[in-house]
Length: 193
Image 1 (cartoon, rainbow, N blue to C red):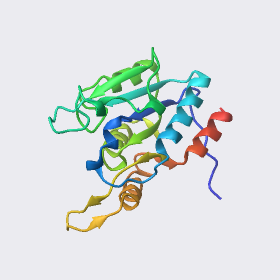
Image 2: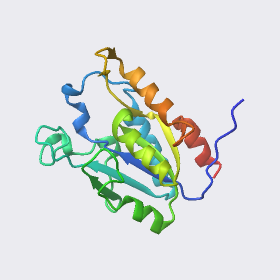
Image 3: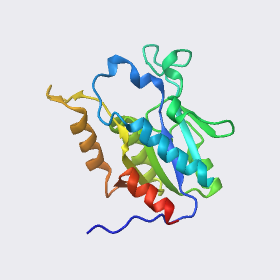
Image 4: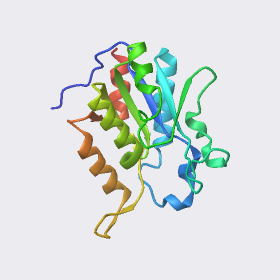
């Protein structure tokens, strides 16, 4: 039987990555976890209710063809997880939320060394951010059902379903850079904190 999950700090930070309308564009193709936005919203409500720290990461793409480019509809946050006035929003231009941003300095300055990561996409910005967070010494928990990704063609030209891509990203991360959990594990730990 797995060991119950417990936070090690009294102020774990919720890090919501790239939860923007850009991912609804049909060019992204099929995805897994169609309820991920609602799951993220539920986690966000739990953090807000307890007054715990949270940060929204917004992708401000500089690629003129990106659905995440500022000035277009896709740049807006998804309504289920839109920031409230006063909540911290950090803009990034690469896949990792730590590159070219003040995220690491802010986390260290505030003493927020334990992170719960959610968002999109598991195989891109989530994986890049979690790897860096783990390498920088942060304690990272990844709520797998609050993340999603898309179908992808692998380097040998084989089509991989989003569920497979998601599962491989989790396998790459779990145990080395983070601990993968469900949102229910995270919420149960919040109740016992």
